[in-house]
Length: 259
Ligand code: DAK
Image (cartoon, rainbow, N blue to C red; front, side):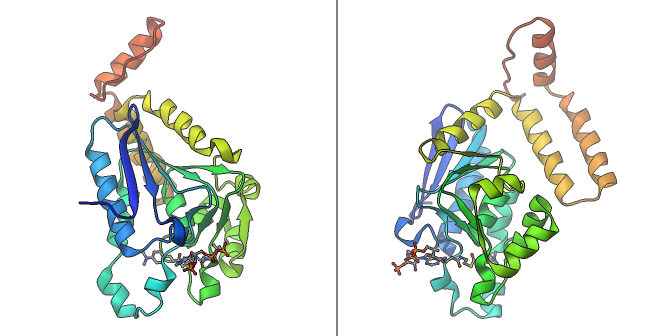
C-alpha cells in the first residue's frame, strides 16, 4: 500500500520505527484514508521483527487536530455504521509492540484519542490536548470518554468532554495524561530516548507486560490479576528470561533476542 498521508520509517533508529502524520496544511486532521494507512503501517511494523518500539508523531504545529470535520460533516449515522472506522482504530489498540506518541502542538478530538490509544505520551511544552467534539454538537467517538476518564479521573474528564476546553502540556502532566513534558526542540529526541530504553528489553517480556497493563484498562482487578499471572508464567518460557537473569548473576549486560 502506498502511503499518502503518513510517512513511515521502519528503521528510523535501530529497532525503532517512526510514523509521522503528514497533512500539515490541515493540521494532520485524521481523514479515513489516513487512518487506513495508519492501520496498515502499524500492522506491517508489528510484524517486522527488527522493530521493537514504534513512535507516532505529527509536526511542531499539530500532532492531529481531530478527525476530518469536512469529511465527517455530511455523514449520516448509517454512513458511519457502514464505514465502520472502529476496525481501523482497533488496530492501534491491538498493536503488540509499544507505541509512544510524541506530541507537539494540537492533539484534539480524535488526535487526543489517538495519543491516548498509544501506550505513552511525550509532550512538547507547546502541546495542547482537548476533546472539543461537544462544540461540534457531537461527543468523542474513538474512546475519549473511556480512556480520558481512566487516565485523569472523572472530574477532569467530565470538564474536558463537556466544555471542550484545551489544556496545556503542564496541566496534562499534572493530571496524569502524559508521561513528561519537554522543550519543543527535543520532544522527538525524548521519545526516541524512551523507545531506545524499551527496545533494549526482551521483546517477549515487553509484549506480555504491555498486554497485561492494557488488561487493567478493560477488566476488573481479579480478571486483570489472573491475566497478569498467566503472562508472568509465560515469560519463563522465553530464552530472554534465562538470558536476563543469567546476565544479572554474571554481572553483565543482557542481550535479548526475542526468543
Ligand atoms: N478537520 C478538518 N480540517 C481541519 C481540522 C479538522 N479537525 N482542524 C483544522 N483544520 C483545517 C482548518 O479548516 C484550516 O483549513 P483551511 O481553512 O486553511 O482550508 C487548517 O486546518 C488550519 O486550521 P485553522 O485555520 O483553524 O488554524 P488555527 O490555528 O486558527 O486553529 C485549531 C487551530 C486546532 C484550534 C482549529 O483548527 C480547530 O478548532 N480545529 C478543529 C478541532 C476539533 O474540533 N477537533 C475535533 C474534531 S471531531 C471516530 C473516530 C474519531 C472521531 C470520531 C469518531 N470513530 C472511530 C467513529 C473524532 C472526532 C473528532 O475529532
